[in-house]
Each structure stands twice: as C-alpha cells, then as structure tokens.
Picture 1 (cartoon, rainbow, N blue to C red):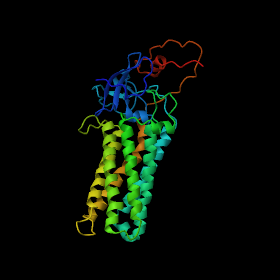
Picture 2: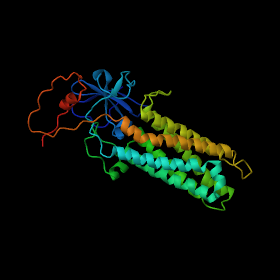
Picture 3: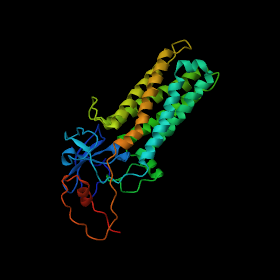
Picture 4: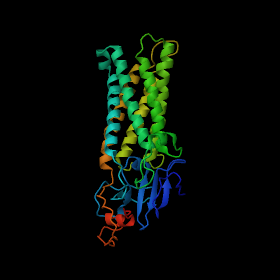
Length: 346
C-alpha cells in the first residue's frame, strides 16, 4: 500500500509508486517523475540533505557507491538528481559528529580502570558529567536537524523556523521520535552524572539520583537506537545496504545495548552498598562509548560519501529552453532531470 501522508511535498507531476517502513512510519519511497524515471527517497537521506537516488539501470555510466536493493526489489544507485542540497549540511554533520565524539571519549576514559585509579573520584565523576553535556548538545542538534528537515522532496522550500519545528512535532515521522527520545535520554544522563559528582550521598540517594536516571537514560537510548536502526534497515533481520548511514545506526544500536548492560550491572546488591558487577559496568560503558565514537566519526563521512552528486544550477532564463538532446545516459542524466523540472522565470 502506498502511504503518502508522511512524505514531504512532491513536485507537480510526481507520484509515489511505493512506500515502505515499520508500522505507521514511511522510511523509504520510490517516486516517479513526470518523465517516467523513478528515484528513491529515504527519510534519513532527506533530513541530512543527501539527495534522491535514481534507478541504476537508467544510468549505467554513473559512478558511485555500489547499488543496493530497495523496498520494491529494484537496484538503485546514487545519480545526479535535482535535490536542492541544503546549505550547511556538511557542517551540521561535523558539529554533531564532533560533539558526540567528545562525549564518547569522556565516557570511555572514565570507564578505564587505570584512569579511575590514577585520578581522584571527583575527577572521574566530572569526566562523565562533562561527557554527558556534549552528548546532550549533540542530541539537541540532531533533533533540530530532524525537526527542520526540508518540507518538500527537492528541498527547495525555505526551512521551518525553530519555533515552528518545535511545536509542529509529527508523530508519523520515525526520525523525530528517534531524536526526541535520544534527547530525553541524554538529559537523564545529565541528571545521573551530575548527581554522581555530589559527595556524601547515601545509598538511597545514589539509587534515586544516580542509578535510576542512568537506567532510564539507557532505556531511552535503546528505544531511540531502535527507531534509528528501523529507519535504515529493511525488515526485522539485519539487511545491510552498504550505506554509511546503516553502519552508523548499527554501531549506535550496539552502543546502546552495551550501555544498557552497564546500567543493569550497576544495580546495588540487596541489603548492601556494593554494585552487582563493577567490572561489567566499566566494560559495558567502555564498549558502548567506543561504538558511539565510531558512529560519530562516520557522520561526516556519510555526509561526504553518500551524497548524491550535485551539478551547478543554470541561471534562470526568460528564453525557451532548447529541447533535450539524447546524451546516451538515459532518462536519469542531469539534463533530462533538469528539463523535467524547469527553473521558474525571474
């Protein structure tokens, strides 16, 4: 069944051939242009300004990453499409990646036994607290990226204002759920890590202010990671599509599982003031932080590698365009796409 309500606005003459996604969400769609050529839209590529992908069969001479199966079973590959690249998309990925990376390094460092033994307990606690601030900063930027995603498929409309994006939460968008739940999780980690910097907390206070927010934050990370993973994975079982985005989602899912294991291991044994398994707490935190670090480092790589090639847009002209002359690349060549979406006159 084709579900179009969750899709961005389509240009005149464009139709949705097929839509797929988990539950009520639409994460992948095949769109047909007025010239009959079909392109693939995905929610992750859309919000990150990576562009549309055209049928590989329609553009055999185009270079780019290997093709991947789509929801309709047709191989698609990156091809020049008039996607109206968003300004600052590369910088946005760098900022989000850098902030997540710094936070991950702090969490990894704070869980290394040699570091814990070498510094005062307060230093270790503040290492986690500082890292949680970087996590929250990155999570906010990621939510802002999702909330202000282009309103139309070709990303030509002006972006929403931040206020409009904040109050205009759309429950049918899986990327908004992923980023919003993740942001809540990072705030809970803020509560947990900053509470841990307080001295003299009794076991009851530690359970309430440190352990409980840590567990809830880990649950939020698991839920958010599942949303992000379901956005790029087709089906229940892992189905890599050779995109950097799929790898990032997989690493973040693994990191969230590791954080969850650490949170469970940090529970207090009944009637004592001892954690259930300190070694597992440190191991889970370290492994999770390394996974998040890997995902963070790959964010700018995704922005550069998975982006659909863009060509300079011709200056709008009042003169009539010359008819398209076959160039041998088929209906997905740049000039065919250009002619099927003419520039408006001044």
